[in-house]
Amino acid sequence: MSAMFDSYSIGKLQFNNRIVLAPLTRGRAGERRIPNAMMADYYYQRAGAGLIITEATVISPQANGWNHSPGIYTSKMVEGWKTVTGKVGKTKTPIFLQLWHCGRASHSDFHNGECPVSASAVKIENGELIHTPLGKKSYETPRPLTVDEIKRTVDDYRKAAKNAKEAGFSGVEVHGANGYLINQFLESKTNNRDDEYGGSIENRFRFFKKVIEAVLEVWEPECVGVRISPNGIFNDMGSDDYRETFLYTAQELNKLNIGYLHILDGLAFGFHEKGDPMTLAEFRPVFKGTIIGNCGYTFELARERIESDDADMIAFGRSFISNPDLPQRFKNNSPLNPSDDMMRKGDPFIGKFFTGLMKPKNPIPGTGLAGEVETVGKNAKLFREGDQIFGESISTFGTYAEFICLSEEGLLLTKPGNITYEEAAPTCDGVLTSLNFLKQLAYIRSGQSILINGASGSLGTTAVLLARCYGTEVTGVCSNTNLEMVKSLAAD
Ligand SMILES: Cc1cc2nc3c(=O)[nH]c(=O)nc-3n(C[C@H](O)[C@H](O)[C@H](O)COP(=O)(O)O)c2cc1C
Image 1 (tube, rainbow, N blue to C red):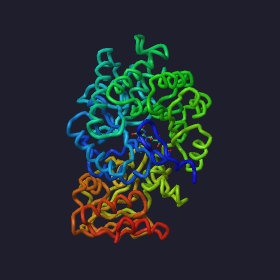
Image 2 (spheres, rainbow, N blue to C red; image 1 turned 180 degrees about the vertical axis):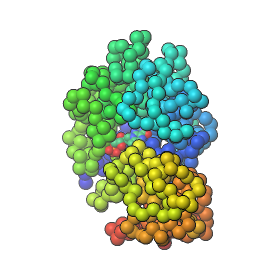
Image 3 (cartoon, rainbow, N blue to C red; image 1 turned 90 degrees about the vertical axis):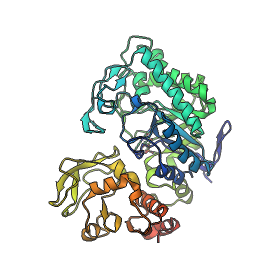
């Protein structure tokens, strides 16, 4: 048996295998950012992992910057998370909460018109747009945090860490990666302060360090992980002195004796091309504790890294979204559902358009934006040209579907080619109708009949499970290869 299935431990934490569910923002917590039963199901389905790391979770209102991402700063949020930890707890798989502050990767629409904050007044300039509660907008120049505000932000992390404990998590992961606030302080590209939080690497690391120290006041070291992205370009990152910065960071994190260091070493999430990519092997001699690698890993690559001792565990993101039973599939050498549903290039929304249906355009793969309404049928009432469609919301059920339609009979998920459009859209008002529908899951009622086409994809799988929870009669259509899996979900 591959080393990937060897058990592993950090202190008292026991992991059944070396496979980690990577933190993946799903945007399912609603406007009040309160975790819910659907999220509990999502994590429970993936508890075959040795370790679950939750989606990034905001530590304060100021930290917000992503529609419908969950929070951990109110008692209702803590209660919501208990639904998740309670359900995952039955499996004994450890679950860490990822603590998040978006910093400049936010917008004044999230903050009643107040500017987002950062280390310095350096704006995201990569031409991308941000989805705010009021629509798709350009990024704004952030306001540098004052030293007092930095201290208050560190307090917010401490409180969030306490709340995570109360919510029943096994530990927390401090999100220092992907161009969010901590990363903005750390890198020279985004930090041009001239006080004790800027200038030298030591100063740029200070905020990160204080956050971790605050979290360590609440949690034992083995229960604290840290994530970094030394090669990343996401959110317009990448500094000339990246290697120096991140080796220093690893060396200092080593002194803090944290449970693990989680490194996005792969380049599949974007590479800044400032020099040679940093590798896990480069970090190994510097950081003596547990190392988790991530980004673009296949099972084979992961196995190689574990067996060559460059890492102790490997995290999987997109492949785990589209394969809730990923470890099982790895173990059985079963085919994977493609995660290219999330990274589709070109125009996935092809085909004929019916009265009331719409055609999305400009999908941005992997970001949650599925497209904009380009064409609307003449009877469509609920949406207009230019309206945005968020894949993450559509993907309340998993990844993208070409069409999600709400008919009088209930929900119909369909893929072009497998079913005629006439069958797919008898009375529907289009994808946006179903988008609203998906936001209000309670619309699935007992006694309805639902046909789910592509039931073995992540979207379909989740839909089958969810519909069953509501006592709905489910007919799942899938390819023969996945028949047994679909049957095991109790699709009729
Ligand atoms: C839809 C989506 C949401 C993500 N959300 C988060 C997040 O909340 N926190 C985080 O640290 N990384 C996040 N990431 C990055 C993933 O954790 C991971 O690093 C990335 O997908 C590369 O790994 P993979 O190739 O196995 O998918 C996200 C990635 C995707 C595709």
